[in-house]
Length: 161
Image (cartoon, rainbow, N blue to C red; front, side, top):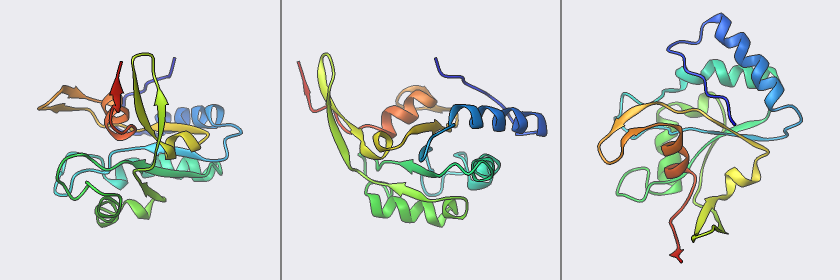
């Protein structure tokens, strides 16, 4: 089972532990994805680049190649296409800490009861580091890592059995 860590701030002790964990967990990985929500334009509560810069600096120090990823949304928004979402992320400054990838390339997969689409960028990476903000969400109660992966990592359910 995956380890989950919570911290209000990344103090020196937390950063040392994080560096140790990242080195161990991603040993041998050539490319990892940081799955993150870049934030809706105008949203002040989502992560900002400075919030995770210490993490990306550790990855760079460990010489772990990474890119930050999210997929477009299904509703009308500046985030509803790969190009406009990437531009919105650049405006927020995400490109200053690492490469941004926003695409809607999916691979179809067959589950037990339905088929679905999974983002190709996540499948092509050796590993995924999920960095998630926690928030109340009007449509689904509380959002966190599961919502981050569920909404930003897969396309639509294609058919049910």
